[in-house]
Amino acid sequence: MSTVVETVTDLVTPILEAENFELVEVEFVKEGKNWFLRVFIDKAEGIDLEDCALVSERLSDALDAMNPDPIPQAYFLEVSSPGAERPLKKESDYEKALGAYIHVSFYQSVDGEKQYEGFLQSFDDEQLVLKIRIKTREKEMTFDRKNIAHARLAVQF
Image (spheres, rainbow, N blue to C red):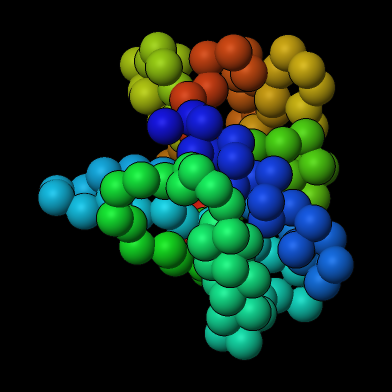
């Protein structure tokens, strides 16, 4: 499946660059009996329905023009915004999220927990520092980045 993701990434990148959009993520997944090709895009002002339709049409045309077909099975193409809980994957995602409230889940538990939410204070190649709230007290915690399974922006309640 990674070849589908790589092929779609290569095809969609120039389409997005021409419109000053950012590629957030491409995923090709099977849910039940159906396959889904999902392309998440963003831009500074946010993505609207017209932006999604434009990218969907251009990407669909580019995929249809390829011979042999890079995706032989039937699938649904979905182009959308990453939403309020955008994943943090690239270094630039973390840079933009400095000071923001994020959710982090881990491969191995840290102090008995597999996930934390807090404000991203700093990060480097090896560690990430969050300011978390435990009951009424705030505390900074440092986490090894290699132990992070997923990180995303979070909505604070």
